[in-house]
Image 1 (cartoon, rainbow, N blue to C red):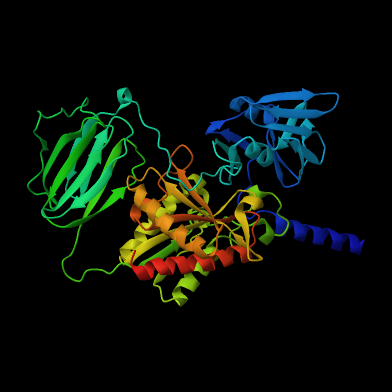
Image 2 (image 1 turned 180 degrees about the horizontal axis):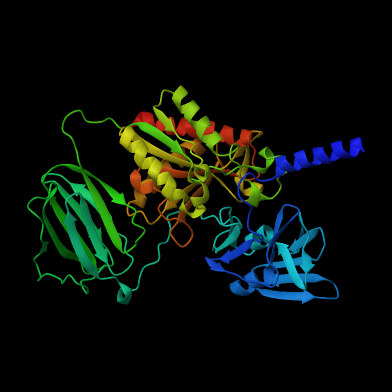
Amino acid sequence: MKRSIIALLTLLFILSLTAPASHAAPATIQLFLEGKKLSSSVAPRLVHQTTMVPIRAIAEGLGVNVTWNKKSQIATLYNDETSIVLPINGTYAILGGKTIRLEQPPIVINGVTLLPIRFVAENLGLVVKWDASAYAVRLFRTNSDVSGSDPATDPSVPAIPPDQYPALQSILADNSLFTIATNGRFTPSITTANDPDRLVINLPGVTFNGLISEPPENTMGEVNVSPNNTYISKVRYQLKDSETSTIQVVADLKQKVSYQIENTGDPSKLVVRLVAKTATNPISKSAIYIYQSHNRESWIPELPGVTNPDLAYNATTNVAMLGARLTGVLQAMGAEVYHTSYDYASIYGSQFNYGKSYVYSEKSIINQLAQHPQIKYLFDIHRDTSPRRETTVNIRGTNYAKLYFVIGLENPNWKQNDAFAKKLQALVTANYPGLSRGIYYKDTSVGNGWYNQNYSPASALIEVGGTANTLAESNRTMDILAQAINQIRLSGQ
């Protein structure tokens, strides 16, 4: 009897250690495709650490054909490019004629076939993301390879047909804020000019069919500006190029300024914040800020008992360790570095929303820039979700986690971030060929689209390896990245 009581108490103690400390997760996993919730008579579920979902709902949404052979108990998915054969309760799948081992076999529950989501979705050309805060699997379409990656080439931004060009609605100079609004999405470009000091904004693919009329030929329209405006004395606009329907807006400045593009979340509005440049004691910008928007991203090899990539998250063993490694190496090289490892889930508690991660990190950026205006370089460290074969490279007999640069196309000055990422990539791969997977260009259709890169042209979001990499492999890569960053810093680029 005594032994039974001891055994029971031991079991209760073990269960208390393994039970989650936070509030209980929802009873069922939710499934979303491009933000639209998918429904099925059987809900997605975890089976032996693998997320299993009813594949018919996804396949039909993508236009993929599904066949089910009841006698042989085999499910087949196919389109013009891919054929996936999945024997129910089998240990393998057949992809394009080749057998591939599965961690968890397909199963049938209440007559509904459930398949391992990551394997199937990625081989159908989908990006799979686990939303821990919503306890949901989120799927996104992609035209790129199995990892959902885009190559390191300039993105092909689709042109809007002329008959769909947005119209200019308003131009407002409200002291430190300069706002331009249209009735649709547009992509402006911004530059400054000296002698005289001006802010020049070009609006390609924008028309005068809105509230602001086109000025007479060979003239420029004017916007009323308060004489009390601290920064702007006059604002004019004109059709600069009729072939591309580019409207140019010129703001004459009363003083030298720097500017910051605000992320309003509204693609039909541009908000530029003006800040006076001080003539005395100019600030030398060369400091570095390192942070992690998705701070709990972790790795399966570092989490005992975890085998599902969707569960590779941890409050302590995570990418903040890579940020600390990068900080320490750079500081040893003589760089001025600031690093934060905020755990946003703990900070915001029940109000935490994973989808607002970049809003949370934006507050951290603003705070650090206010405290340390000498910061020039911003690095947001992540890890990817792609399989190990995509995120690992062996160079001269040693394994490294590959780097992957992400550029947000919603930032009007994204090309500056792109040029910065390409400099880093060139320096990294000069001595370690294959260490970079390339550059992934993302707009709001596949992500945040800004990634806070509007705060500095020398800003980069960097994925380091994936869920299957080890901390050692990732740290080796951080050491190489530190050398490239330091080289750029010393050159003043």
